[in-house]
Length: 219
Image 1 (cartoon, rainbow, N blue to C red):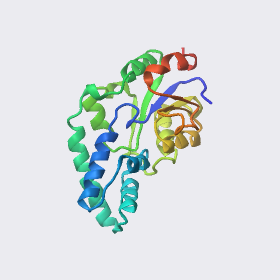
Image 2: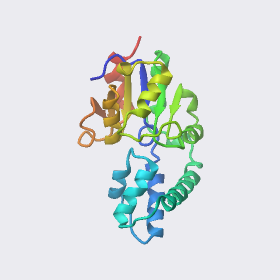
Image 3: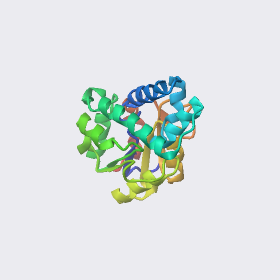
């Protein structure tokens, strides 16, 4: 259940900006290099999980097995391709309603944080020109446990000095929803209700949120 919101913690990919397409193209390129295909349906399995776990899923699909040294090199190659793509991003790729919503809640005294598995979160936020709209950034460089473990959200709450009870997480992936629930936080799903059914509420995007969450805002 969502309570009074004193802090809002946002996943990055699929919530603030759609970087999923760049991840997908990089993973597909890697799969093709090893002689198998990687579909958009396959890519759904990678949402909200770490880079290495994503690679393991990819290799399961391709029926391949490699040692950890090889897997690290493969993951790094994929990430290099991905970074090349996101380095070209700009503010036009921010999802509708995000900037307005962030400015609105910050004006009401609500703290904001990023809680993402991405190790490229600072780069992406800089490219989008919105890094100043977040008080705290907790990404894959700061945590060791991937969602659905709640570590990323609990660390964000700790750095914001806000009790988890008064934090609301915004997520687009099942693993992220589970992490927020485990952290004892309210959670808003951004996406399809059929997929994010365990969230407290599900919205198609931030353009729908102000009216619904208005009663939870700290005044």
